[in-house]
Amino acid sequence: MTDIAKLAGVSQSTVSLVINQMSGAKVSAETRKRVLRIAREIGYPVERHGHGMEGAQQRNLIVYLTDELSTSPHAMLTIDGARDAAWEHDCLLSVFATRSDPEYENAVLGRVLGNPALLGVVYATIFTRAVTVPALLATVPTVLLNCHQKERRDRLYSSVVPSEVLGGFAATMHLLELGHRRVGLVNGEGWIEAVAERLKGYRQALSTRDIPFDPQLVREGDWQVSSGHEHARALLRLPDPPTALFCANDLMAVGALEAVRELGLSVPAEVSVVGYDDQDIARYTQPPLSTVLLPNYEMGRWAAESLVAQVNGGVVRRTSMKMDCPLVERDSVAAPRGF
Image (cartoon, rainbow, N blue to C red):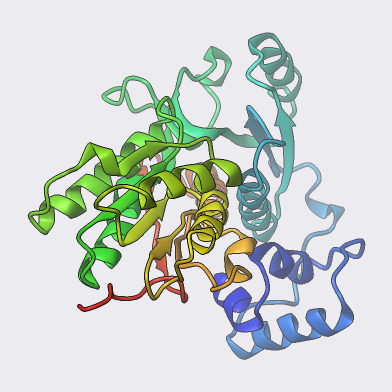
């Protein structure tokens, strides 16, 4: 689906809506035709069979339990991935958001765990973090999505998280390889696990090139456009300003792009900018934003497929997966002047 989205020039969510024949989706007929044509050309199975009611008595229900849905577009992409993988295995996905309320979480589990159609549970979080898995899931096939157990040595469940260290490393190393030596980092809030991981990747890339870490070049933002704008202006006004900015999400990178323009500079001729997440907006900034893909859709697919394999395939080995966060190169990065 990632390949189809790139070839068709649409989002993965749009591809999912078309492939799964969601009649209520606001997708133009022309876009539907283009997506289906490209899917057939590359061999993706667009005609599906066998999803009728004949399997109603089978174990074909996957419960997706998450702490939050509304704070970020990432949650919906992850659900899309899990739903698509479930559907391909003749399963349905049922989603519950608990807002981290233990009482509500236990109430949901109390209702669904007795369902004879239950295949297993995908236990997800909006921010990557360590979790205490509910005791009610101890005897239920469960996969952790975007989270991991607090005690890693007691691996009772398979889990998948993004490889944030490699994501931060990839973004920073891309800039260093082009010749930048002063790279500013507009990071997120320090209490979030992914923020520390991206900073670690940033520092590892600097170390690889024997560039000393300068704490003056690192700022803590809040993920919003205004935060990226504020911190980018401050960094670019330093006596020895950075020639490149790595922003820990695309929204802050949008703010950084505007800050560069306000200061009479150009992107990428005078300042290079890299974002993180690969949200749809990254394709439509001026210039289009180089960024790091946060593999939400792929993690959702992996979680559901692993759960099905665990139950139907007899796979009992617990796997702790860190999924690659690849660099997406666009037009907001260039070598520094004079390099």
